[in-house]
Length: 554
Image 1 (tube, one colour):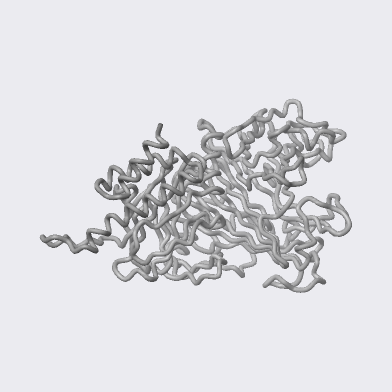
Image 2 (image 1 turned 90 degrees about the vertical axis):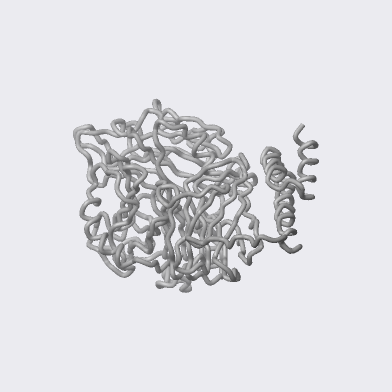
């Protein structure tokens, strides 16, 4: 996704000051929701440059630091750095030192990091790199398919929201994409690792061991339905010498798509991936989560580097595990893509309930239906953008969009984002379930002159709205031009077309409720029928809704 945001100059002036304040690797403080650092896609920083971009939040004292050549670190409030690894591939063999990856680009010959856009509602940071080993790009002799040159290049989009979450989307350009796999090795396949889970200091923190930064229950695994288990690493959950039991270490939770790293901090990093599905290569599932097999003698709570670390020597890296899928999220003839949702959770909160609900709101987002016929169009939910897509190009009067989200326990609403095409540069007002929400911490907005969602549509003059709200019941969102006031009705009997509009609206809501009922969401349907009966008494839709309540409400 490529953006050109309004107000870039103002953001750049702030970035100089903010970078100086925020880029130290120590504990982070609560700041503005802002990105500080480089805005030039072509800027080549010095080797091992830290804090090329730093993102902070006003909702929690954490930060995310983009360090060259390819380390994107999630810092807890007390300075513990967690990363999700990086894309790598192997051509000559599978062993240490033989991988092609961005981390090998020590001189930043190909690696670039920059702020693509930022406003009050969202920040997008980019990372572009090549998969290299000793200066050579993997598959450089193949047909050129990347826009940057021959061989394996990678685009990454990091889309941040004010609640401390971000979507990480990875796209690998590869002329042999159809012959590539994220788990198969051997003749006929090109193997790619897409991630890992680490504490990554870079410089060893002397006088500390991994157990100073991690609880004995190193990781909590959660399914989308809320089932969870914390894995104790005392003893290590597999045979550290032989590797036996690696794939079975977590039992049935080896297929869990949500991982919480239990750092000794108030805010703990987590990651949500695609839910496992039947029909995959791992005991009939598409996802496998494992601990790391130590490549050196295990002398700490988890495998650490360099080898034979002690408290006196400290450690640089702690390996926490990895996730493997039997397929890619998206696959074309020239690229492979994967996606994750990341963030922090307060250690005092329930990770199973909170993160499983968030995961369902992202991967099983409730359906959006426009409840007024004013010319607005709803395109649906975009997982990569984590946003509902709307268009008001055909709206002739004041720009507005009125959306009903059919939320339910299986498809909840959690802090939704709306991207509205052809809105213009005017500000907006927001109502949720008929109640006005003042602009501030619970309602944030911004504008884009242009926006590329890679969906084949032209996006321009786009409004973005982010709302801090959660629900497992249907919700209504009304977004309209700020200050717009509907003309008062004339003191006379309205014409038939006006009288009918109320019935038409009730009928549309009734049809939506029927769709929700047929999808098996009984509780949500009952709530919707009740609202129709209450808000549209006297209409035919209210009578039908009342009949449905008598039938399914028993």
